[in-house]
Length: 107
Length: 143
Image 1 (cartoon, rainbow over the protein chains, first blue to last red):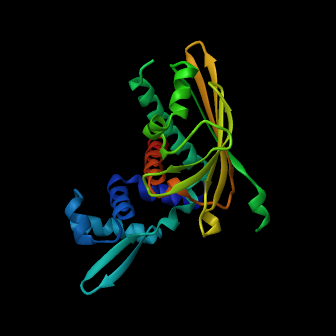
Image 2: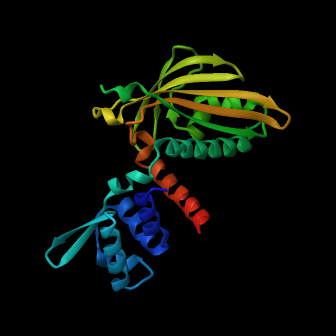
Image 3: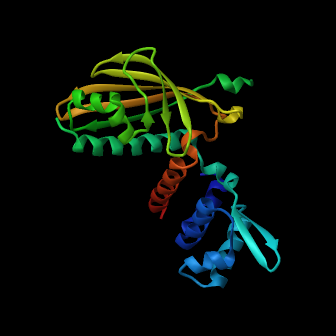
């Protein structure tokens, strides 16, 4: 595993940190407050995770008034994304759905 | 076009499914059944038929039937046109069905990916969710 992959895996190995990152990926830019409201940890803990994610280049912050908005930097994940394995995942999940369908179909 | 554009990759997914080829063939070739497991479509199992696969992320794939051998082989193009060449995709999907003692060995090969393509159609939605699922599996193994 390359060093960049190693860092990313360590960053995302923590479930709370990964949940924060996934939320930013799926829902877009958010404030620390909004993220804390849905995390199971305190605001300082969320801030600490965001700081680590920022150091790893996985999130970017933007100051607006007294609020800091965080957004995911998907390009930072590039070292982890192998196109062919991603497509294999796509077809595996479609095959799962095909099997479900076959179960429901008449002979 | 740079020289890497001529290189292609392929993805193969194979699975033994406990149903006869004839039943799986129906799921691969009847539009209302294809829609249930793959995507909305106007497929017709006739060589030369052009159709679209419409993903729930809004992407539309341009396809053309290349080969039809009932209960054995089905092949069609799987192309995604995008203004940004990095997202352009020209590929061929081929399903092969082989009867086994317990049912059918279903093989899907998709070939034609260029290494330069970072993400395309499924990337936005299905891809990311699978990516995270895969990541969790990898993490579970690396403890």
